[in-house]
Figure 1 (cartoon, rainbow, N blue to C red):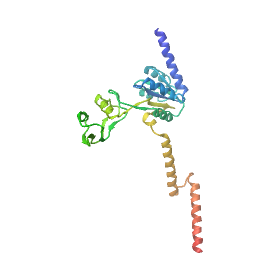
Figure 2: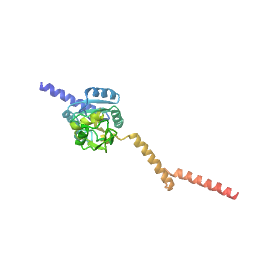
Figure 3: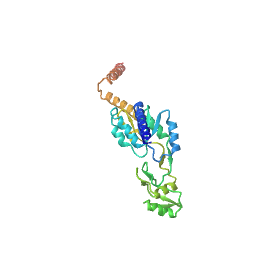
Figure 4: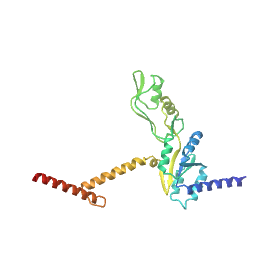
Length: 260
């Protein structure tokens, strides 16, 4: 029986290794708190672009250790594994895949004991609550209140939970009453590995289309400055000659008019 189990695990590790070698990029996911129905939906949505493979943490680590000779920085990938891990395999651009995953996420109410994905702040201003026990409840959380037009209002913004902090019973209850859904149901991408580079979540979240547009604008601004300073190089020489030619023509025309 043990031999059969070991053989099964060995084949599972070999399967992971073959996928790592087959695809251009692979990602580490954390499926903790991920409903199975949502996971199946995500797998279906990503099917043309990416493959999701689930396995035990220990087997994933063994597989990654087995590709160290062919892949750089694998130790850093292993260190990033946490929660209920899974692997994502793709031949697409990691940023494109991350955007697809993010677009499919949906909001959900917070439950006590969950870890907050972001800072949770409730804004200053009116609430739907009439004066009563709610004032004491808000006060216990350090929230300053006042009564305006028959409703409880918050005097100032209040940071209830910081990113990665555990959500308490009281905070979860208040968020529910306020209709705030701070949790996200979707795949939690920890990192994506491509050609020795590890893209963490904060990097993947960057809008690469906007970055390219910004770089193009910077390039144009730099060229304009170089022309203004008459800086000569292979990128400016032809434009500077044209600029000088147009300037000479303008001076010639002005001289003819003045000599008239």
